[in-house]
Image (tube, rainbow, N blue to C red; front, side, top):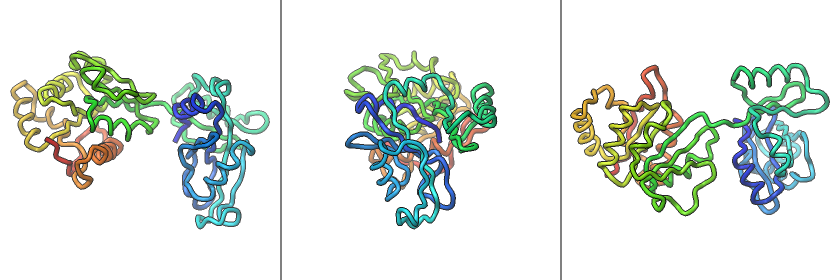
Length: 313
């Protein structure tokens, strides 16, 4: 969990003044964890701190109750969780948002910043220490979300669009979306997605980070094969190819003839998805997203999970 500035920027651009409510401390059971947050504006909201009465009341109070507030879920709100949740409510506009530019971690609380908080934030900023949201001596310390996993989606068809919709809200993911022409993409590209029209997508491969995850799902089997070949030469963290078992058998044979060893070829996962979820584009996207989020990385790179995948021609 981290403070994701992208949806906050979008909300402020659309609504000018936006409240953010974040869970900063939990005692006992709670519908969500520390760091879970929601945005509220006049007439709407996004995100969630767990739904139910806590979320409803927080949305109602957001612009009138800035700062910390403590909520016993049972006695105060009649919820069955039985725990106590402390919330931090802050109201942002464009000027206040600008104060967060360039920050990797922020801390706020009453009075002078405690020494323990100063040490924690300094370590996080200067030494790259992994930091989770937490309360420290009455101050809430929260990292700013930074994309750490580049994902390259090759193809802007139905499955490509579904994958962007499913993966985009995950703050740690940075999406580069490649297809052969601008008209292959939807009219509106979501904020935070780097759409890259390329008449020859193979010329783009050298620009991909070595640790990127690639999802190949273009309209052309010939282009799919060429991308597999190019990525095997370039290197990657993970590559998944949409297709049937028959397609993958043919690709395996052709990649061998191109000079790739079986060990190299086996690093490409094909088919992708999760068979039990079906073949609808959104169902495939959900299965692929689950696969990406559960990948195990070894010294040899990310290995293809041994699960059943959906077949696509």
